[in-house]
Image (tube, rainbow, N blue to C red):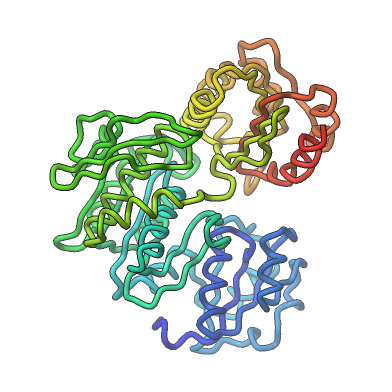
Length: 450
């Protein structure tokens, strides 16, 4: 399907972060855009305010008349998270529509463009957002499809006037294999999505296939230590590209960038943690490969405000600090905890964690328990199932039993606010990829006025 021929687009699962970015993009192009999602959220409310019609009933009668017959100018996009028995999904299948996954549509959009793709089991949202921000802030420009809401632009999509597109390349379901990047970044390859891949070796195989799709004379930036050949980067001082002299000054991480050709000293990054310094190092390397001026890159890094739900400080008063993060894998939790400790080494850390997926909880139960045990106090929510059905024996209680810190408990999500009121913690961290984000505003109000 040619991009120029698309006039109408229907999204089955429009409320997802990646799907909503595509919806906004096509609406910006002047297409008629509609969609369905199971749950109304702040993001779907924003889409509706932008003129996109959304139904929250999985009934094919809610599909607008313009989308009920198959036409060459009509595109239907779906997410694998939609149940296979969905009435709306099956309506389009039975009518003979050629349904596309989000990743396939990104492939259509990026075809013929200069593509910068950022992949990794974690770190890809922050890194791709940094790249997009550097290109935008310096005046270079780009179109971007991101897996989070950037604070600088309050959006997950950016619209550029040039031929450059920045894409967050998702490894789930091998989605990133629809892309053929000119510049690629791989931030991490830790075992994840084992419900899809089976084991780590098959996950690595997919990342190698992604790397092989780099265009001729393209550049591949690889986190040092990953089993793929490329331009290595790290904060260890031993790679082709390095972050050095890392320190904390006035609540910001400050570091020097070196790649053997260019040195940028005293870069300031508001996003804390060594892992984010490394993300910034990769983003700077990608930006330099496009010929962007180092002084402008330094300024862009300094005013990058981060991504919502990526180590986002919600409350910062004399009595209370509250940080929220999307971490949902043991390595992400470890990096997040380390960053919190670096910024607030003398405060008692209370963690509210919502496990995401029964399979992930099962596959990494011991690793989750080891990391969670390092917090001063742990409050576990029930497992967020997302697309999955329960697995016998895989529960939050099972995970709690493995945690060695005795200052731990399970709490129903609806009771968290009262529990926090009673504990009045000085340093609170919410982590998880499910619907734990619905607690952010209530916790903000509680801790601000406590």
